[in-house]
Each structure stands twice: as C-alpha cells, then as structure tokens.
Length: 595
Image (cartoon, rainbow, N blue to C red; front, side, top):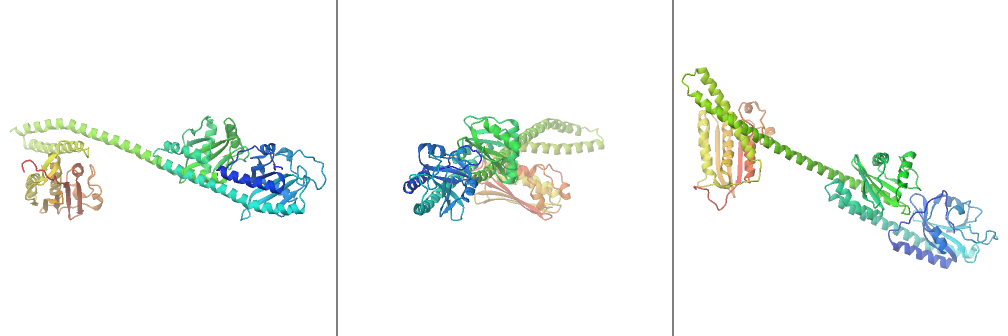
C-alpha cells in the first residue's frame, strides 16, 4: 500500500474524540483485509484542509509504523485515479500510470519490481473512495500486498466491489459518528466556558476561570491570552516562553483584523499563511513557535460588538492533532462569548471603580461641609452677639440701626444655612438612628404650626390643622423629626401667596403615621418635581426664585424620612399649589414620653 504525497509534510497526531470510534473502524478494516485477501488495508479520512490523514491500518508492524497518521494531499490522488481503471466502487492505477513519488512519502513492500503484467507491483494503487449522501468525499479505502501476489481478476474484482460497498457504509457511519462526537464535546466545552466566564465579575478572573474548560475541551497543550493594551500571559502553560514585543504587537494587530473578518488564524508548518497576514509576519510567528514546545497555534479574537478586546491562543505539541474546521468555528464562537463576558466584567469593574470614586467624593463633600459649617458657626455667634450690644446703644443714628437690622437679617440667614448644612452632615448615614426612641408627633406638629401662624397671618394666609385625638408615636429622633415638620410647614407658608390657605394634617393610616401639608401656593412644575429633593436645587421659576432659601430643606426632609424608615410623596402643579405627604412607620405598642 502507498500513501500519496505532494510536498513533504510532517506527521501529525490523530484527532479521535473517543477510542470507541477508532476501535470500530479498526475492526471494520481488519474484517475487510481478511475476506478480501490483502495483507495491508487502510482508511484515510479527508481533512478540512484538503489532505488525507490515515486513521487506521492493518498490516505488518513496519507498515503500521510508517503509515499511521501520515498526511497526503487529496488532489494528486484524484488526478492519479483519472488515469486508472474503473472497477466499480474501486479504482486500480498501475504503477507506471500515476506518476506519484512513492519513495518520498509512505511505505512500500519490498516485493519484486520486475513482474509480469498480471502480477502486483509494489507501487500499484488500488483505492475505493467513500462518499456521503451528498456526494462529498469522506474517506479513501486503500488496499496493498495481495496474498496471492496477483492483480485481482474479474471474479475477485466483483467480490472486492461488494466488500467495498458494505464496508463503505460502515466506515462512513463511523467517521460521521466521530465528527458528531467532536461537535458534542466542543459544544459541552463551550457551554462550560460560558458558564464559568459569565459567573466572574473580573476580566482577568473570567479568563482564568474558563481556562480549564478550554484546555480540556480543545485538548490543547497551552493556553495564552492577551487583552488590548496589556501584556500576554500564560493562563495554562507548563513551560511558558514570553514572546518578544514585536510578536506581541503583531498578534494584537492580527487579532483586530480577525475580529473584523470574524475569523480565526491557524499557524502550523503544514499550513499556508493565514489571511490577512503577510508572509513576513507569518514567518515571525512561526519562528517564535519554533523556540517553544508548540507545533501549532490557533489564534481566536476576543470581542464584543464592533470592538476587539484581545485574543486567546491555543497551542498543540509537534505531534498534536490538526485543527479541524469544527474546532476553528467553535473557537470563534467562544471568542465572541468570552468577549461579551469580558465586556460585562469590565463594565462591572468600571462601575465598581466609579462607586468607589463617588463614595470618596461624598465623604470629601461631607467632610468639607462639616468643616466649613463649624468654622462659620463660631464667628457668626460673635457677630450676632455684638449686634445685640450695638443695637442697645442709644446714640446710634437711624442709618446705623438700618445697617444693624440688615446685618442681623443676613446673619440669621447665614446661620440657617450653617444649621442646615450641619443637619445634612449629621444625617449622611441613611440607616443609623443612635438614640432613637418613641416620639409623639402630635405636639410636635401643633407647636410648629403655632410658630408659623404669626408669619402666615401677617400675609393674610389662613392655616388649618387636623390632629389625631391621641398620641401619634413613631420611633425616631425628636429633633430630626422636628426638622421634617418645620421644613414642610415653613415652605408651605413661604410659597403661598397672600390671602392663601395652608392645611396641615396628622393621622394614623394602616400602621403608619402620615403628615400631610397642603397649600394653594405657586406650585411646582413637572420638570422641577424631578429635582426638588436634590441638595442645593433651586427652581428656575421666577416667582419661586424670589423667595430666599438654601435648596437644602426638601433634601433634608427626604433624607430624614428615609432614616426613619419612611418616604415622602409629592403632588403638585404649577400655579395651583402642592401637597407633601410624609409616611413614617408607627411605633406599635409603645407610648411617647408624656403621652
């Protein structure tokens, strides 16, 4: 038997997914050899790159050693068969008609070369091509060294045709089962890879977690990866060799080109330069591989959307299996899946970083507010104190009294700003309620309404109050709850036009204590309602802008309500008034002090 060769090619390992397929195929050709009367019979499968790989062979040990897993191009064999004799399912090509260089590759028997016409020549060729239902060439069944030393006569040819037909179906089924087993193996590996990578919220960890599944699923010797802008790293390699910087840059550029083409690149001595890589770049990569224990490299791009994020490189040893078309397609799919997982992990890392930065900024702002507030508080106290002393001087002119009154108003306003800044700082923790106890809101609301009645009456504003007949206890901090009520009632009076009406209600409702403050004032636009609870927010509405304020009152109300386990609801329309409703959990089973 002979194996066909064009250019000289290295021997590559077989690619069986399991031993059962190989054993089944070996049994088939052993049976064929026995009944057909040939000492050497072999099956060569057609690979995705257009070469034949001899998978199983029966014959002398020296023949098996020389032929098993050898590679030969398909086209020269098909060309030789065109010059042969048609024996039905078989084709016989005499040694002087095929023009193949048998000595360059394969194995031939040591039988005599000078033989009569009806005798078998060591370089004679007898093959049976096997096709699938679609007419695609799957494999070639080859025969060599007939036991009687003769070219089969018509009777034996008829028997050989029957054997070839029977064996062909079995061989085709076995090879198809092997292909299916490969697809199942790779699909299982892909699912495992995606599961491992998706569970990680770190880009580096996502690659590391999926390494075992890639190595096992693709049966590779080593696994390397590189993310854009980073150095390549060995995820799995027992003897890593760091590639030179020029090779690193080349592979990064090549990965981007592969992602644009949605393709993978295979580097192996028996392969042509993968597109769109030039011959020089290909030679550089192969030169690097020659310094390692790798015999071949499959490079798959990592990406998401239109962005290439890097690459994964899988290597096999010099006697490792050829990369199949199924493996190449699956590697590209895994590059997409890993790319999406990496993009998600990077987004999570960025969000985590942003949260950290925002927390640092919030802490800085809180510290700044506290520092500025405390620094302003002392001089303001001095200013107010000396203003009181100056105001008692009987010798001051009317202009001086006017100036003192203006300074007092400014000091009062600034003191209010400082106080609200300090409250904002103290309530930065939305969960901590140290020192909380039962607080009856009934007297709190009554007192604050009474304090606002005078300013309201001075502008002709009517205030009505509805309070429960008994205590309305909530669990909280008294002075913080006073801030909530004071801000809402004070705002209602401030933003109600003269002659208007403000209604304040406190009631129990299904396990909650509800404070409702309604006015028929200037109202709040829908756009402003989205921001009124933000710190330092001031409406652009001209009528609202005429009123002094810090823009902190409602922010404090919402923050304090949240600290006490409650919430604030707003209903308003520009020009018709507003209703603020604070809902707080009732302190069930407790009584407020003094109730």
